Amino acid sequence: MRPEAAIFQTLHAFDRHAAEYGRWEDHPSAQHWRARVIACCVRYFSPNGRVLDVGGGTGVDALMLMGLGFTVTVVEPSEGMGNIARSHGVSVVTGGAEDLETSLVGEFDGVLSNFGALNCVHDLDRLRRGLQARLAVGGVAVLVFMGPFALAEALWLAGTGRFRALARRRRTAQVQLGDASVPITWWTEGAVRRALPGFEVLRVESLGALLPPPDLHAGSTLLRRLDAAVAPLPGFRHVGDHTMVVFRRVA
Ligand SMILES: C[S@@+](CC[C@H](N)C(=O)[O-])C[C@H]1O[C@@H](n2cnc3c(N)ncnc32)[C@H](O)[C@@H]1O
Image 1 (cartoon, rainbow, N blue to C red):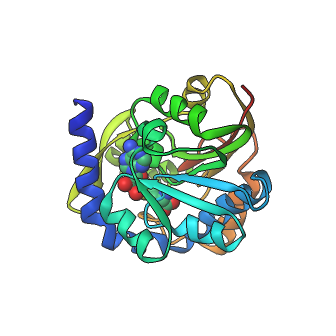
Image 2 (image 1 turned 90 degrees about the vertical axis):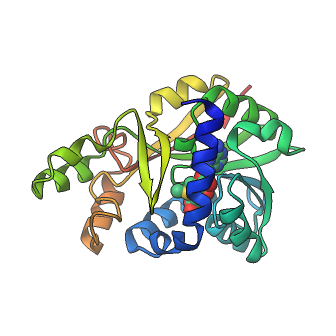
């Protein structure tokens, strides 16, 4: 698919889906994962620093981080998603992860990209150039993206006899979003790490190694506790619904 066609299709899907997005956000498993992402940001970002939220959607993370004393700018290509964030008082620049060099000015102390915005980005070299332009040396990027294999999802699908659905994560695929679909690249930690020379990895953890994704399962308090406990362990940190990687810019 040509890059312009992929971008057009993605924006169309998220514009149409914006009003419905809150349903996913309200799911207890999604809220649990988001709380862990925010805790990670608080741990690694400079206190009260300037944060850029790439693909920040309806501004949920931005509002939480603003409430914790950070100054946040969202960069978001979908007007439908971005307008919801604006309506809550979030500062939003219209643009994609590929355009950080040109759509913004200045440097940030921290970058967040949460819940798969980077799976809509198919050229990580453009992301690298953007991060080098916008993230201060020494600054931290918390990147949360979906990988090609999710253990809890696979176990749940196999356990409920949905063997054909086991192949739903292919390296490149169309993911259904309401009545539209989005072209997705499933990123491994290794691929993102290789695309970002000049950045060191401080932490890797999974979100959803033991907790199936919200569209499949209601989850439970016990599963959420176990999911958090195993998240940074070798053997579990790369098999979540999402992978959270903390990078520091060193050059
Ligand atoms: C699953 S939503 C996640 C939104 C938000 N980060 C959150 O945690 O709720 C993915 C977001 O990525 C945005 N997106 C799509 N293509 C993008 C791109 N090329 N660069 C940055 N964001 C993109 C979508 O418009 C959407 O708002």
